[in-house]
Length: 355
Ligand code: F0G
Image (tube, rainbow, N blue to C red; front, side, top):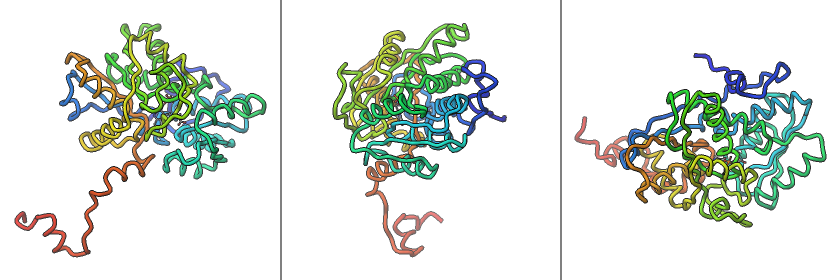
């Protein structure tokens, strides 16, 4: 079936008008994959993965970016700008090119994954690496975009949230209902805000009659929403969520409290173990930050939180190819080196008796 992209498919739910350009890279309609293996370790009825890494630039950012860029073009803007831990910059760069406008990105030097940097560069964005972290980059971008005719496309731009809420619509559409829990990684907190908005809109339109509980997970070294205090020097292996002062702080707390959910911390070790589990057991390769959702569900399961009756959806926000370094670091020692000899390889693999 032809998929026209987020703006066209969800037009009735989005702030679009006849002047909004029909921008798309056919983002959205990402798979909701039923767990076949990991679910067996858990006291749950069912577990699903919303694999947002299948979007055109490899992350959920495309849903919101297509809206933000379309609206910027509608308003006559010729340049967009964002601060980013990587995925937002990759998405902004791609959609700016698609729309024929310019893109400037501010990134924390040395702290963005290789795949993301290569995307922003290949799509022709101006890439400025600052000697500072994401929070500092965002402060600068907010100031510049408020003084110059440059559109801000971070998730404080409300059109980003509008586009991103469509992932909630897809989950409801595909499940013909809602999960009991929606688990997701939390960084700048736009996504948890967007999902909650999406579910609530369907509830208000009477398309669903219950709401899921939102369970968000931050990395232990960057978990201001857990402690209630901004983190000046956030750290985590999951660079995508290395954020100390989330812009959508209130939105996240609101989603947590209104839904009766929680925002908790997971360690880097737990994140990487969940990443390996998704790849090694389910065949799903995600970047470290994305595995925080499963890491959190595993942790809650271990603490005896689930009763065996629940349905959980874990949002897998970005593709594993975004961050090949961290992946290879974890399993480099599994490469087996041999000379180019068929005989030696057969012998090494102990295949000899199997003809
Ligand atoms: N997962 C991935 C893969 C991300 O790239 C991000 C955020 C998140 C989760 C957290 O989502 O910020 O809405 O709470 N990345 C941003 C960026 C900050 O610049 O690409 P959030």
